[in-house]
Image 1 (spheres, helix red, strand yellow):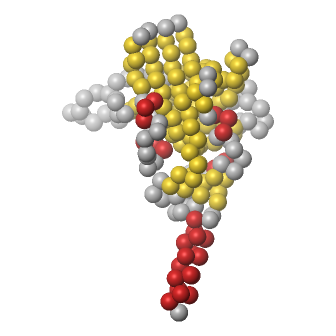
Image 2 (cartoon, rainbow, N blue to C red):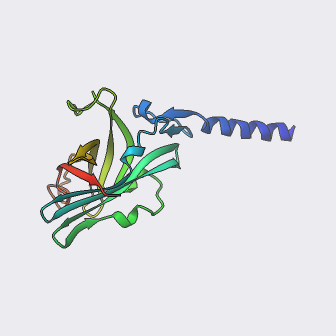
Image 3 (spheres, one colour):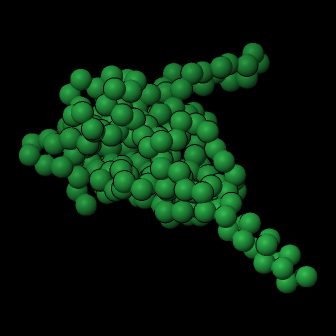
Length: 198
């Protein structure tokens, strides 16, 4: 009898984790121990090292796909990443060294998540193809305690593989008696086109 109960518990635990949900079909709901899987490999084309250059200003973004990551509630495939923003020879911010550190939740990284946006999703994308997917991820600047989003679209620039990103700071709430937060990220909010360099 003890063996039957043990076997039943093992089978039940396996069945709970075996519920697989396509990340493109996830609309903000979560099921404990489910696996939010990148079944269609939507995240794959966004991986790599990307570089924006404008005069002496550079923005480098590195994006990595993590598979079957358990975040203490459920399993998921995510994109995590970091960035480095330089003006001239001065690095204003860099969290690239944090990419390989262990993490519990993708929001603990400078860039993280797995939000898939269809071509008709907000914000509108008039130049997206009918089946094109974009990514909407969290953008975090821990040194200033500020958070927002980064919308990423695959594109071509000068005949090279590229991404177009829109960085947007989140809404600010100021508590009276506390220091005012900066008006923007150290990496200025706005749109950037980054060429794939690796």
